[in-house]
Length: 56
Ligand SMILES: [Zn+2]
Image 1 (spheres, rainbow, N blue to C red):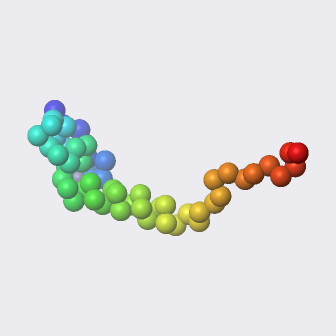
Image 2 (cartoon, rainbow, N blue to C red; image 1 turned 90 degrees about the vertical axis):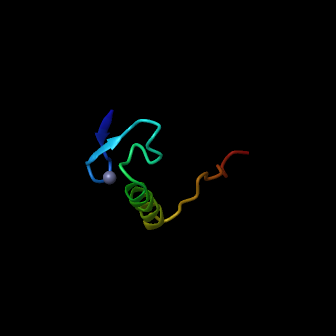
Image 3 (cartoon, helix red, strand yellow; image 1 turned 90 degrees about the horizontal axis):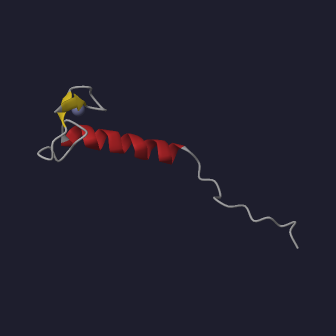
């Protein structure tokens, strides 16, 4: 059972024998992870919750 690797689109083994699934290799998995980190660092952090000061 194979599906295209999300990173390089090569056929990736989806069986438990492939520890890197759904990627074809450890390298593709790391590339995808670093892409996520790059995006999270590029976006400035915003306050998650703004307290409602008007409520008394
Ligand atoms: Zn790949």
